Structure formats: structure tokens, C-alpha cells
Length: 135
Image 1 (cartoon, rainbow, N blue to C red):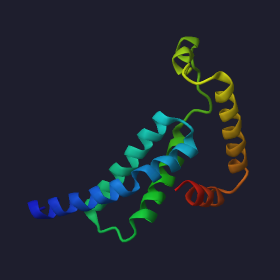
Image 2: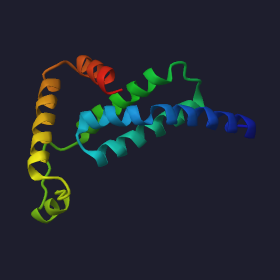
Image 3: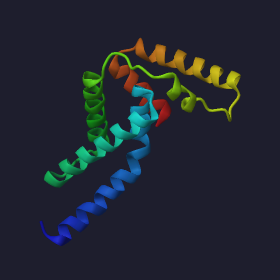
């Protein structure tokens, strides 16, 4: 590839990344419920898109990004074990003492209600709701 083509392609990819990174991260986070996992998967999505961007011109970046994100999430759950064991020592690091325990419990309860309601819907309906109300 010529230098000018790489420079032009990099600028276009930067625009796509800056425009969609927050949306894609939120979409993934709502599906995996872990900040660290969502960050890792989001970076995987953009790496895949970057590699594809080098091969072909992407006509609809938003649709392409969400499709790659859906596939990445599916791969994550396919490979993920059914449960995770966490030691007691690790749980002390997870607790955030800055917020009141009651407020945190209230937020967690609300999030669980939303997650249960989302899980009762088909994958397509879940995605539509996430895109509509959180993007």
C-alpha cells in the first residue's frame, strides 16, 4: 500500500472509531455486564473492523460494527465457562465504599430487573431496545 492510501484510510477509520466507540461499548456492556470484558470485546471489534477496513470499503459502518459486535459477543459466550469462581480476597477489591450500600443495592436491583426483562426478549428485540434507548 502506498503511504497516501494508508494515511487516508487511517483518517477514515479514526472518524468511524470516534463516532461509534461509545455506542459499541455500551451495546457490548449491556450484553456481558462486565466493564473489563466489555472493554476487551470492544477493542476486539474495532481491531476486526480495522483489518476488514484495510481489505474493502465499508458501505455502512454502523451496521457493520454492530454485526461484528454481535458476532464477538456470541463468540465470547461460546468460549466462556458457565460459571466463574471468585475468591473472597478478590471480592474485597470489587466493593466500592464510596457509594452507600443501600443505593448500590437499589441500582443493582433495578439493573437485574432490566436484564431479566431483556433476556425474556428475542436477541433482535433486545438489540432494538438497546439501540433505541441507550444510543
